[in-house]
Amino acid sequence: MDQSLRQEFNWLFSEEGKSLVLQVEAGFRDGSNALTINKRLRKKTTPVRAAIVIEQALLRMRGLKKFACADQMFFTRRGLEQSTSLQIARYKATRFREVRNVADICCGVGGDLIALAARAVSGVNTVGIDADELTAAIAGHNLSGVGLFNASVRHQTFEETDLAEFDGIHIDPDRRTKSRTVRGDFFQPKLSDVYAALSADQTVAIKVAPATPAHDSMPESVQREWIGDNRECKQQVLWSGPKTSKPRQTTATIVASSGKVFTYSADAERVEADRMTSAAAMGESIFEPHAVVLASGLMSSLAEDVGLQPVSGFADYLTGSMIQKTPLLSEYKIAEMLKLDLKHISAALRKFMVGEIIVKKRGVEQEVYNQISRLKVAGENRATVIATRHLRRRVAFITNVEARN
Image (tube, rainbow, N blue to C red; front, side, top):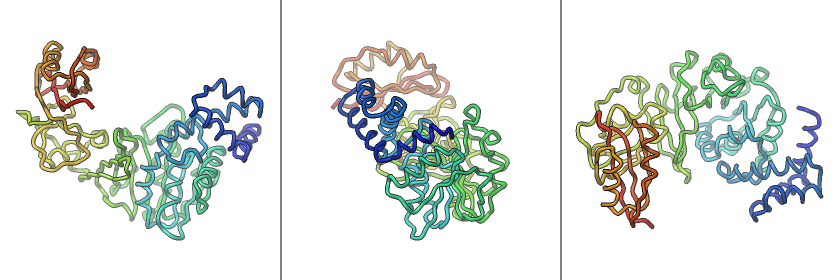
């Protein structure tokens, strides 16, 4: 790390620096703009420090979406972008609950590290490890900032780390070494190097991008889990070792904002083999799989288990009479099915007195979505318009018609 940058961040971590960051946060919340705040700051400190303080305040405000404790944390832009939200990190940490000595390698600013350090086991040892000196320093301050003093952080590389001292490993390889990648051969460290350095006795979680494909180095017993929140698929985790709950299975998991977890698993062989035929007739509803279901390839097996069929082979919607409800599928009650034509859709919206629409589309062009979104509507109800295909026909569904609040 550049010596001058080290000094500036050491100052930022001081009581004076922390106090100024809190003051700037309060200023932003009160409606002050960055220019006004910068003028005030430059009466108290140097221009460089003023810029660092403003950036930290803005990053903390953005960080609240991932961390309720963001006001007590420090970030870099990249560190915040790549960090695991505390809600998802806590879920992953539950799978290390019975593991005593855990290393969080490539720990970043400490999203997963904080959750691992707080896991419900007495006498646990948790160590964060990062090759970047500033990032490691930030992770250490974030631990103490949220009141966790039972963990430590080391500034060292994966190659310099003696993995034998740990019976649990969480690792988030760098996927932006030159440009963003989903290929394990270009991670830093490489996926093959990670697995080569591990023992069969270690419980391992490797965080990778949702689109990362299977790799030859993955053990046969690996459990691939796609994890998301209420709206998005956030990451894929490769689980292996003695504490793997569902070896050789593919899993889709939602961690809701309440902290409640919803999960579905199927044998990897079944996921690869599943081929479902499209529904000949529509049911009363359309079901939209969550992004974790689509990313994991579990749509067909999940549909089969709950009694549904694809609307078509061109789009990822399901229909039928669902025999078992699951938060992994969002339901849209069909009010009318019609030809994908703007005049027909507009007439149907008038009929149902719709004044507010949400548009969804799969299997049709983006321009279709844009055209429907621009329709002028006026009425006391709201509805969701789904543009897609049924069998080989382009169709639109008016769904979830209800009174506006």
